[in-house]
Image (tube, rainbow, N blue to C red; front, side):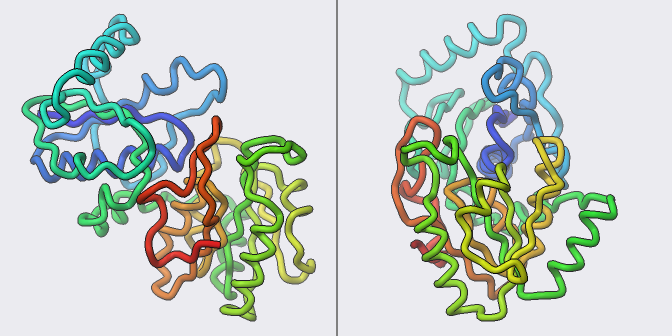
Length: 294
């Protein structure tokens, strides 16, 4: 019996998909096999890539048969169509519907091979095996001098990882980007709690991000040398070295905060609800209860 998650999306969503599948496999004494191909081979829009090979994950990769090859798109479509018409607990192909936490996934008992398709963006899907997930998701540290020196700087101070993510262009009128007002409130709240904080700014658009952040130069270090999917893991690794976090409405910085081992960490997160075309945020189960929502 196998549990086969279809991994897709950016690094944060890949981690969520893995963690939910890992728990199901463990609880049902099933083999975990990761589909690292089908979620990316037809991605002509975002051109994302599989990134979980930078972690301490021991699971085998799915075979062509596990991926429904040949004619995988047609065969996967038929699997979805059939399984949506039978009771949830009897399905062999589970496709996520909506974003909110679905407790039914915790009780699933596969009768054979189980395919999972979804992001499953909540720690509730794996909270009872948290220690195992943290071990699995131990990041292979980069070896270049620039990242290692920056890590030393982070560890030497009251480091706050500050993440700005742009889902729309910086000047767009819309609700997919967290606003400058959010970051101002979040920084004020962090300053009250950690007056000696030094901020490390991570962003997919550093120049635009700097215009949102009202901090003096001596309070902030801009992290801009890790660019693109190939080195996203390195930025995530640096984030996890920080003691505290101001995250974006992004699963990438969600994981940076969650994977941090600092026991007294303060995590400030956007408290708004968004159900937009490019992102979803604030739905049931997304943010751990102890995180501060602003």
